[in-house]
Length: 279
Ligand code: PBG
Ligand code: ZN
Image (cartoon, rainbow, N blue to C red; front, side, top):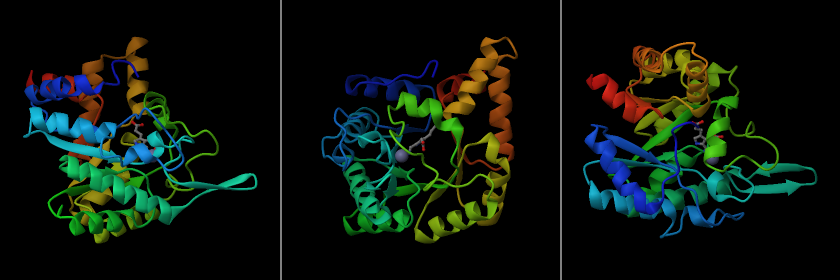
């Protein structure tokens, strides 16, 4: 992903300071651990990379909203978003075992000082389990941004490379949604809100403007959209080929996302956008 970097713990406070100085209100953290295993141990370790990064950012810039990605794929040796079991040739993702580990992970992020946790795994019942875990431990004020409508997509490819998390076998279609099914997306959003989501997220972005619009209209919740790595890479490639100007293209895309109902936009252009919109 051109212009997108992994940061070390030592760099993360400076980077968040830069984001803050540009006028950004929030950052979303993804972690890449030293060790991966089949229980994603590094995801909920007290001194895991995300937990340490949250503390470093909050020590430098307490006003900056820190959101943490809650998922297991970066921490699993096999790269799936949950605990897996092999059954002959086939593998299953174990929903309830996964939800327990996700709730532990969310709690450890909250304890480190995260303002919001953002579960991106798509297991069933995880929003309720995370809400319960946070409340039971005195983190009633920690919010949840739920990846409520997340479609299985080829456009996550560049992210998986950058985050070192492509699945070693199988794919993610058993837990991510079928992009042909709009009704399922709306049902998933309704469930997540019932379970306690504060912000609901739709992803990918341009491919889901119809869903984004309906979610924002129907539920009236703060609605986020994630302009994903493959969507980013397409524009970068087009710019490189001389098809269009990057700034014009990005401003047009972001305007469409706002028009379709996005209250929040997650984008790899955040820093550039902060400068362009100021200009
Ligand atoms: C993993 C996760 C993914 C993204 C965000 N969290 C990849 C996936 O689900 O395969 C994709 C982000 C992007 O493509 O920019 N839980
Ligand atoms: Zn994942």
